[in-house]
Amino acid sequence: MATPGELALLHAVLEPDELSHIQRLLGSWSLLSDLSFSDLLLVVPVTEDEGVLATQLVVLGQIRPSNRPTRLHHDLVGESTVGEGWAIAREALARGEIVRGEIDGISSSGPIPSEAIPVRYDSKVIGVIVRLGREAVRPVASSPERTYLDAFDRLAAMVAESAFPFPEADVGGEESPRVGDGVVVVDEEGRVEFASPNAINAFHRMGVYSVPDGRRLGDLGIEESAVEWALTTARPVVEEVERRPDIIVLVHCIPLVAHGSVSGAVILVRDVTDVRRLDRLLLSKDAAIREVHHRVKNNLQTISSLLRLQARRVPAKAGREALHEAERRVRSIAVVHEILSREPGDQVSFDEIVASLVQMAEDSVVGHDRVHIEVAGDLGDLPADVATPLAVTLAELLQNAVQHAFNAERRVHRPTRPAKRHPEDHPTASGQVTVVLRHGPYGLAIDVRDNGVGLPKGFDIERTNSLGLSIVRDLVVSQLDGTIEMRRVPTAEGGGTLVSIEVPTGPHRS
Ligand SMILES: Nc1ncnc2c1ncn2[C@@H]1O[C@H](COP(=O)(O)OP(=O)(O)OP(=O)(O)O)[C@@H](O)[C@H]1O
Ligand SMILES: [Mg+2]
Image (cartoon, rainbow, N blue to C red; front, side):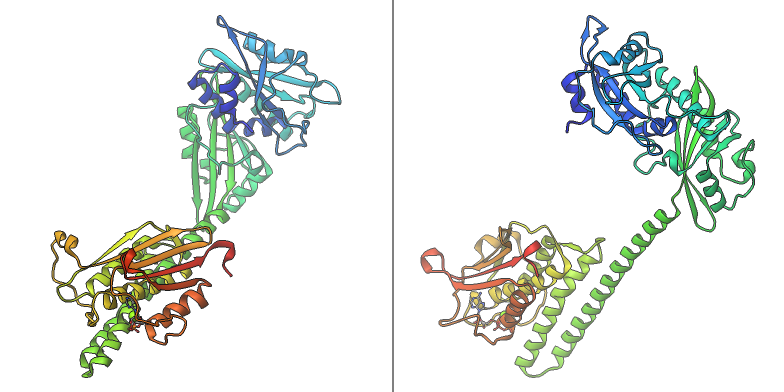
């Protein structure tokens, strides 16, 4: 369905600032609907002829009251053939005054007693609010209904005077209280004329039990700076009033202005204690989870340091290398926790992980021959339970490439920091490793390709019992439900080894 803005562009003759006035009205008119217990329609003229607004109207907005059953079960928004039965709307538009009468032709039960309120912006009438069902509420004197309708009449007069909606956009926002949450009406001095039962409940929760009628909020012991501000500046204000222990009430103060001077205010109040408590809980839970990741990372780093220290004390070369390998594996897991400890939530940017793993693999190359690792594509954010096994897998594959692909002899001994390289060294690198990351139809895919010596003859990943690739197979196949394929690239295609991994994501994942 078209938005009011699109409809207006299609049909109406509104200037941009007139359109934003209309949009602000649509953002705040639930107040009008609830205070009048009525369905409201906003209509605007469709064409303008030499400065005179023509008679055809289009419905730009419709709202139902939250405290009464609706009179209008169908949707009128977008209707532009607003016919004869809408005479009062046309009259309000032409005269710029509130017109009472009937709207006919929109309900099978006949004409609906209604009123049409001109919407003025600056000095021009740019639309009309039609309030359907004027007769539905017949309040007795001094009943709450009387107060609501009286407040509505004052606001309606403001709409006709170009004083409502206020120029401030969205002062209430989505969280803004509605009439049903609690209403207080104060006079121009800030003395309470009326407080709805829900508003009284909110006062009780704030520890205020005295009868508020005729007293200022400050006298009752309630923070009243928002009300004072609204009354002196004639501007709406939203404020959270906090009372110990931990009671938070959202206060939306709407000044009532008549002929340029403030005659009182409507104050909507909503107890948001539970909402805020939940927000805080979520925040602190998030912080706690990040703290846990931080500690896990620290612990893993400690373990990796222990392994390194121990490796130094092992005389046998094989044992020493095994400890270095273990140390490297632990570090690749620590990389994931490091990133998880920085961002809220359970998603990690896999690209950041890849960058750290590439750095680790490049750092582990010793000797003169360089291995240049290049990364293409990205996988975006991944859930931690996918990112961790993938990180370990990628670390193994990169390690294998730098370790086995470019020399028959093992060239990697320990993960020492290499001597500083000149950036221009790369083009002469003898070894090239490319990591390609992408999301495919099946899930996510990672290719690791090198241009080295290729896999040993007869090599089969299904049958290998060497540790590195067994870990990889276990993580990809058993833990991630994915597939792994390793093959020698024919010399005609550049030679070397290609490892392809695919891991299902989303609904495929079990
Ligand atoms: N990119 C590659 N190029 C050439 N040979 C490779 C490559 N990757 C793996 N291989 C071969 O596969 C073998 C098994 O690899 P795997 O990672 O399982 O064990 P490893 O690297 O020898 O020891 P570790 O358990 O420390 O990883 C290697 O020894 C090597 O011969
Ligand atoms: Mg290996």
